[in-house]
Length: 111
Image 1: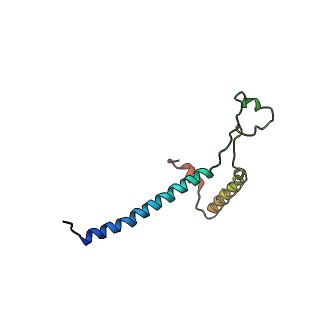
Image 2: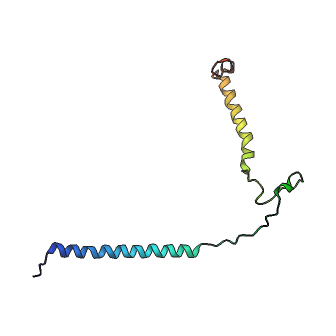
Image 3: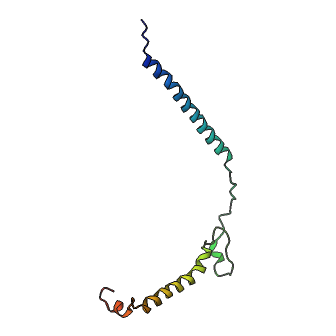
């Protein structure tokens, strides 16, 4: 005997679109991963000789360029004078309004 349950048939029909959606999403994900891998740029690394001595440059007036040079923030040198003037202005303002009493600060035992 074959029993036909309407709830069971509705359940089977509702699973088919879910599997189809999951299958399509997996295909899209796989395709995107493959396309990203094919777009990646492969850098050619230059082989450098290991016998280069970075200490040879010290004291010769030659600034080493490349892997031996330290990288400094260019704006940091411009920023330091501005910071000192800002701090000086703040200290003058505090002294002017008598909110900063340096004698009390230096005489305190907690200093």
